[in-house]
Image (cartoon, rainbow, N blue to C red; front, side, top):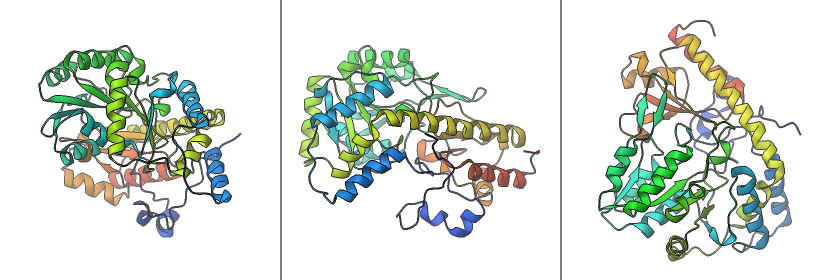
Length: 395
């Protein structure tokens, strides 16, 4: 089946934060917001068909947790898409990934204790840590600008894990905003340190299915030692553009960790699955959607290549960081020599609306996260406007 990635999804009457940027006037000029990690073309037709069937049936009542067909779908998907064979009892459905981060903070740490994060990383982690009365412990990634890549500071990580107040680590793999994948050796070292120092690892892997073939994202609990110290978060959120859906599957092999996490979930009055999310999971986790994801990855990889080529020709001072798939690009604009306010003004005039870098960590003011999961003509138009403003070379 040929899939359509050239049709723009409608934001009209959607309540989306992108809706004000998607006026008919702007869209007629190929102006599109490139912020917010969601797709700007429709999600999988197979998933849409499944939700349409549910809606047409007229029954929107209760859905049980972990029915045999639901468990079978999740197990199939993790085996086929991630190479991970899980046991049925490991599965703990929740009301979403960020909700689950909050539950993990409450379950595995006490007020005033520390939670490790590795900026630049999804800014919601820090917000949740502070809201829950914990202390963010930052093990900043090491940026190598010459090659436009980040590496993990494992010595710094051990120093933080050694602290008596360190109780939990929030791992992101692939990392958001860079979409870089952490390898098995790095994750095995994290697991080794976590077990040594009594730290639990919550691994947010919502971008896991989008990693490219050369850099597969191994589930944290599938690497040596990870099953004893970790929880893995999966959802439809990024792969199928269900960003704010109130549903996630948390996979917890260790019985004691699973008991503590599930107990915290139930204390938060979790009482069952949203019926539409139940149907969405069954419709998403199918062999047909492996084909859709492969096609979508190819399309967004071509988008990434086009952006890199455009910038190399017009603004070679700008560094687009290394990524391993997905539809996010992390751009370093510091080579332009502009003050942060000047940089923001330039991007505003070009109508290149991207996510501000400071959301992902201190010192990232000269970076932006650019979402490229959109019809290519809008992406090319945005960088053409930027080229004209800067007087860059021919694109």
